[in-house]
Amino acid sequence: DVNGAYSITLLPHDDYSIKLVPPFGSGLATTIIDPLSINADKSQNLVLDQAYALSGVVRGPDGSPASNVSVKIRNQITLDFLDTVLTNQSGEYTVPLTVGTYRVEVSKYGNASAGIPTPTSFRMDPVIKDLVITGDTTQDITLPFVTLSGFTTDSNGVPVSGVQFKLVTGNFNSSYHGFSALWSVATESVVATSDVNGAYSITLLPHDDYSI
Image (cartoon, rainbow, N blue to C red):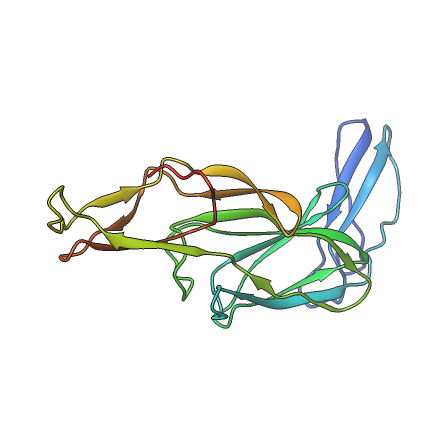
């Protein structure tokens, strides 16, 4: 409440983990209290940590800003989820964090435009690993998309229009910046359709073994 007082009714447990989410603009960071043993009525003051700003711009391979991309932050050691934000029209994001080491995941689902070509949906978990925060930090992110393009034809080389493309391969492990990451793109949904000239273009994450 206005005095900072709180009360929570719980079942007895030796190993609670409690996330404290401060009001927006408070200058405080989401703080994890872990472990917390509560086996009887207990009074305990909980201290929220000072926030430092992790900020940057998410861009496509050509440097254009990517909007409506979800940037998710986890504690590198515990993997506790701390916060998620969407990039704005300029591709910018800002997340308040306390001192620590983090991993960053990016993803996009749904039909909201990113302002650049992207897969229908995608996830990179993580895109950044072992990010140390000791003060305000700038960390830009480049999405490593690639493009598959060409023409659909019959055996005589005659263009075929209206061909729908669906990905069969969706989840795969990738080595990115020297560490293992789980990447995924949408499967079974139509990701492209060839035009009247048989031309097509698909934006993808790099992978050695797609099935289309």
